[in-house]
Length: 428
Image 1 (cartoon, one colour):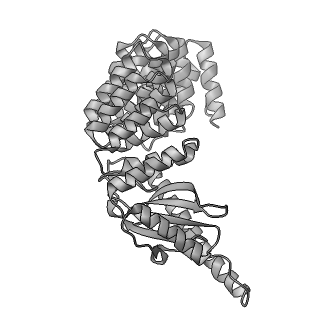
Image 2: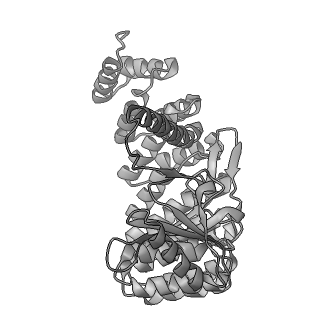
Image 3: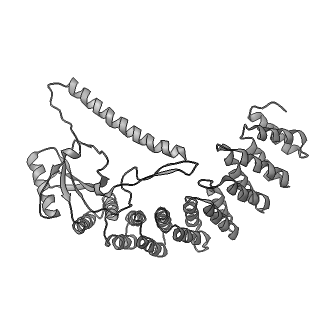
């Protein structure tokens, strides 16, 4: 939707204002403190301090020595470039950043040649210690405040993965560092990555670390990562980890194997052996895909199930995003007319009513009027009146006026009067 474009670009605008505002503040502070010692500094890519060395370990040691010699505070960043996997999301603006109701989409694809891993090193104690791991794309104009950045250049993939695994082992009790290291590992272009992440997802004793590994698998657009997610889903018993695996299926389906992912999610949604939370998560992921075929799949699941809670979850997730509106309305109207469960009928009507908030509410209004005229169920009619009462459209108001004046059921007439009054209409 267009709002998504505005929200992302608003973030960009806010970031720009914050950065430019900071620059103005820095200039004013410098001018106001003329003659005083300046304690802060902002570093850009051009300010990185190059470090030479034969391998990664040597470069890290030299960066530490240079920092100690320079006496530039208590902490510093050390960073290097590694070979990143094509098509993977790294920065905050990765993925779809614009889409509208006409099916126009803009995909912000990252250039992997700028991807780098950053280690924040604390030198305030008796020895240098790692406190943070970050992965950034330096094609974006990042600024680094108050800490110098020691740049190690390009590092061999095997050395980088070995270093990150060493960090995980030596910081096994720090979930934030291990999770960030796993994220960095998932971005590397290496056949070692998927087996490594799968092993952590299956065997680690920490729930949070297992979840980070599963997310890493979902970040990799490859058949092998889907194979690994299949194994993880079958092996884990924890509901939260199963839900995380389902979300990772959904992320991967945006890039590769969409039908395979949708088929897997459908089988989970229909499975009697999975609990409600897991099946509902699968439905949510299916609903995040686009098109009439996805809506047909959701309603096919709906019609094949007897579980009321799962069926309710499907109705709550049905959307006309990327789908012809009338296609959704027809399916919802059929359920509202034929469903034996009054609660599900009411939920279908509410979903139809939501269509009145779109740019073209006529379809939803027509569907509600048709439903009112064709159903003998008073509770469904009551729900239709509530829906029509949310609209100021002339056709909706006229239908409420007709109900208020002529309906044989006095309760329904009173309900229509209340909705008209609440809508500020006194024409009855």
